[in-house]
Image (spheres, rainbow, N blue to C red):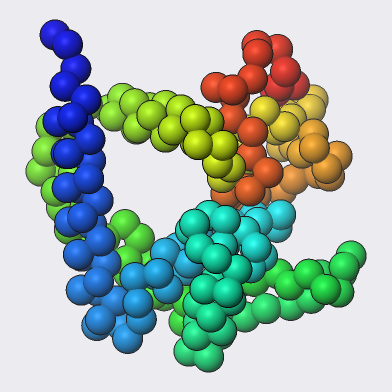
Amino acid sequence: MEMDFALTYDLLERLASLLRAEERRVGKELGVEPVHLRALRFLGRANRYSDTPVAVAEYLGLTKGTASQTLIRLQGKGLVTGRPSLKDKRKLHLSLTKAGRAVVSRVNPPRAFKEAFAASSAPSSLDELFLELLTTLQRINGSKSFGICKTCAHFQHRGTGNSYRCGLTEEPLKVRETGLICREHLSLLNEPAGTNDS
């Protein structure tokens, strides 16, 4: 059966619209805008290379000014805190406060999404299909992939046990970090076979 790309696009767009409507509803209850919720969700999953204002702007597709205003608002609400980098004092690392983590746990993923997915008979390979579609669109648009560390071409697993390393920075990685989002992510789908040491 031939795929109806217009229908697939319409379905994805409609799903995104419904999820954004749920995001607006919850955001209104919490006194924050949808963009604030998206920034909080990103920072809750960002690794140490991606917890910066620049990465927030890139990930959300915002201008630096809009991202800056968003982060100022989140800091003012006590949801985000910042600390200067030990290596470069001009660079700011952001993290969620306890209150910020509480907001993220309430909205990630939205209740309506969980309920709809639980009630559907979606195939288990749906994530793989969407991941491949997203990766292809990012490659076509020249966008960063912002993927999960352990799915990156730079990710290295050396020896046995929990000995992980970033091949780009040559820094060791903690187990927890391997499941976080990285702005330096290089998709394995874009790399020839044999480039990953894992």
